Length: 512
Image (cartoon, rainbow, N blue to C red; front, side, top):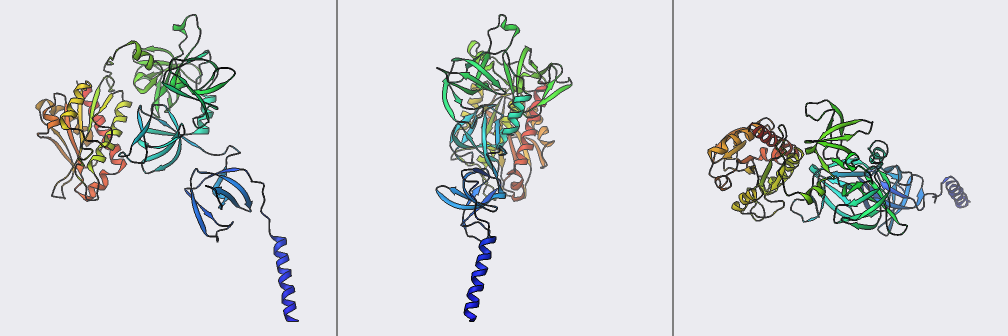
């Protein structure tokens, strides 16, 4: 009798459990969600007590198969598992906060892995957009034209895709009278939607001209053969219209290179700021006055932006009709100046190695790339003696500077000494004509970095001795000192050091 009572009780308990349990719902079947957490555990069942079967990364999209309360059953690489719904967001509602980056410089290397020693698998032009996947230290994983790669965060600006779309629709100036688009690059992708991540439906070639159907922010919808149409990125072509007086109806545009760029009321750096623009913003040009563009403002009226802080759609046309011509020097900028940057060592020449294993050759290249971006933003032309982990002879380094018509030569190094207590940075020169240049660079650095200033010192380095240019060799600190090595390997130090060198260059050329 006792056994029968226990059996009845068990049946009743099971019945109540089944009645109270909420069955899995299939309402979410077919839905795609995106991971909204740095990492998300995939489990064998719908609950925290189930075993882990894998992990997902932030931004990863997965297909939902089923749902149980707050848990989603998803398909990942052909296998199924369960994830917490509160750590995801739906793509169907348009709430996915996709990120986009814009390149701040021309010829930004896209690398196969997050390292300057990895292979360059492509390049971004200034103003090019790419989908941001994730960050890893000072590197960003991106997708552009279906290709995945890595770029250094120094040379990019992050923007929200949704925010960018809104801004381009409501605030960006539009070239409303343009009716044709001419391609200015070798090959340009045509996409189904005005979005860098949209499906590619074809491509168009350099110098081909197509009728414009619609302009939306930085994107242009063009008519293709037959009844086909698609979207292209406006930076890679020229907009034009059939105007009886084209000189009065400019369709040239300029794109902003750096966040916080000043658009001024008058064409002078001392004028009041009308607004501040961000990297990737596009403005229609009314006319060019000396070194300034008069541009249409999104709120109406016009203002001025300096030629050296933008990229112009006129650049490719100008290069066809005129030979290389050095722009005139503009005080307060580096416009008209060519700087040769020499990242010390490279390839099988590692330079010194720090107490924590840091290779000098890697740090010099990282510093040079960051400095190059600042100099270009200031209007300078930058020549790099090496752009990757390759060996370049000392004589070839000076030859490169001469061949490119450089106005100054800056060699970047990090120091070492058997006495590991020694610290500080030093600015070296060889010829007496280089002394004032070394003093200017050293002064700029001393105002920017918090290391012991060992001053300017003469030294018999080949890249200085065999150099007719204003030239310096900078030892930016001692990797042989363990505490200083930690400082030197930080992104903050490189930012401050490159800013100091930039200020020194500006001071030197302003005094000439």
